[in-house]
Each structure stands twice: as structure tokens, then as C-alpha cells.
Image (cartoon, rainbow, N blue to C red; front, side):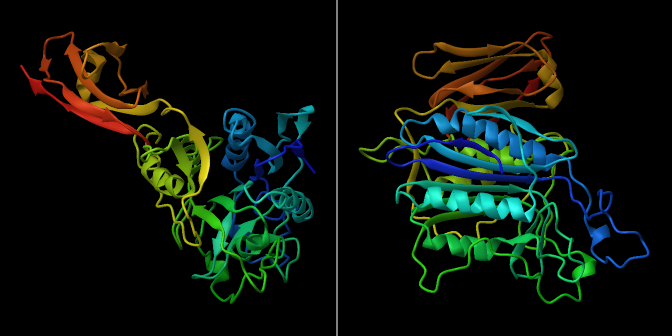
Length: 389
């Protein structure tokens, strides 16, 4: 087991369970892969992964850092399991700790601890994050594959999580607000064409009489689609989730800036297509929130809007290396930020609200009239249209 935090908090708290699976025992290249002479139809459908341990680590560091330090919703507990080629160590409340692998036995025990902590207060927020292989037969249950998936040759997916039934099982939990972030494929390998059901394992069986919950289930990709990530990098989906969790919406009358259960999903979808977050050549994924029942409950609150990330570009793009950028307050003209010439678009953060964007060009080839912009969550992008002298 790996419990990085478990604090007694009187009142609402955030309780998180993070799983990252990159190392698979029985899949191609794994330490327990069966000899070719033995039957294993599914083994070759799944490769070893390098991004999930990095994504899970990024989520844990954010939870132990800024996300978990919100006074209105402190991080009460953090369970984490990571399967990687080399052991992963994270700094928890007891110092540097080696993280246990994400096998079914460890996952079941960690889920039970997480469930009990979430269940202590109706205003708790339950957060579940998974990154690793996933599989789905048609529109059937979405299976999340753990390190020891494939251990039983004739009940191959017993050591995989049945996400849909597990989510329904959480309806019995007292925590009203529940967030599930699932960074996994939903395709069906050819080896499963003759399979009727995965028979994956529900970590909590659904109750006979379910209770309504303010629930967000956000998957990184649509039905029958694959999820992508660069090798040894935090996935685009996880980066978008971490950004969206810190981006409140515009205040309603008499309210404060709030991150709510129904702002996170739309913000993540926008951010996965935002050039300021995407790496070059990184494919965009269409996030899916099937299974959600959001009610707009507040997760985090802010007295004022945090800085808004921006991404400013030029058209044509080769003018970037000659452009000196200036971002100013629209009303007063006071300079907010300035950037000198460079080969890449200008990325940074600025205060929410109206602003003015201008650019000067050192070689005198281009001219621009500037433009008015309004910086607001979740992000801002603007392309300054140029003319040639």
C-alpha cells in the first residue's frame, strides 16, 4: 500500500486515489510474458507504456502542492499506486516513499481505504485518476487494465477495473461530489472480436437503490478511440485536467470565482485543443463525459480570478523572430508584460479582463495595428494578423 497523506480534518476535504500503469507483467515485453508456444491471444494487443507513471506523478505532485492547499477544501488523503519499469518515489507526509505497484490486490485495498475516507462527510470531494491501458467492447463496460491483467489466461480481464460498475458503486458513498478522470484507450483490439464481455472487476458493486450524486466522469477519448501521450511525458489529458482544476468561472451575481463540477469537463475539452497546451504534433483527443450527472457543485473557490494563460501568435508565423510583444491594460495603457523577439509564440499568464496586444518588428518588414483582447478562463489565444511593408 502507498498512502502519501492521511490527515484528520474536521469538515470537508479532498480525498484522492491516483493510479498510473506503465509496466504490465503479462503483456508484450513484460517480465512474465508467456512463451509463444503457450496460448495468449491478447498479449500482443498491448504494449508497455512510459507516459502513465509520469502523468500519475504529475497529478500527485499537484495534489500535494497547490491543489491540496486550498483552505476551503484541503487534501485530506492521497492513495497512489504506480507500476513503472523502475520504482517511483514520491515525497509524502512521511518523507520520500517508494510507491507500490498497481496490481489488483493493492488496488482493491487502496480503494477500500479511499472509499471509507470519502464516506465520512457528505461535503467531501472524491477524486479518482487513472492513466494506463483501457479497453471497451462496443458500448459495454470500460475496462482499466492493471499491472497483473492477463494473469489468468481464461479469465483474462479479472485483474482489470470495471470502471462503469465501480462508478455506480460510488453512488452509495456519502461524498456528494465525485470526480473521475480516466486517461485510457476505449478501443477494441482484434483479439477481442469474438469476446462477448470483459468480465472485469467492480471495485464496489452498485447498490440496488442508487443515490443521486454530483458526479463528473471524464474520459480522455471517445468510444472506440485511442488515447495518446508522448513517451515519458505527462499526457495532454492530464495536463488539461490539472489546468482546469485551477480555472474558475466568471462569478455569478453575489458569488465568488468558483471551480465547479460542471466547469471542469468543458474546460478540459477546450484545453486539449488549445495550442498553448498542446505539444507540436500531439494529436487532439475528443473527451467524453458519458456517465456524468453534474449539478454544478463547488469544488474550489477564489476571491479573485487566478492568472489566465495566454498564447499569442502571428500570421505569417515567420514574423515571430522579429516581434517585440506588449500586453497592456486597455483602459489605462499601463504595460502588463513585454516579450522580445523569439522563434516561438508568446505564452504566459496575465490578469483576467480587457487588455491590449501590440507588436513592434525590429526588421521593419511587417506592420501590425494591434488588437483588443479579453483574457478569461480557461485560456486565451490570439493571432495578430500582419501586413508586409
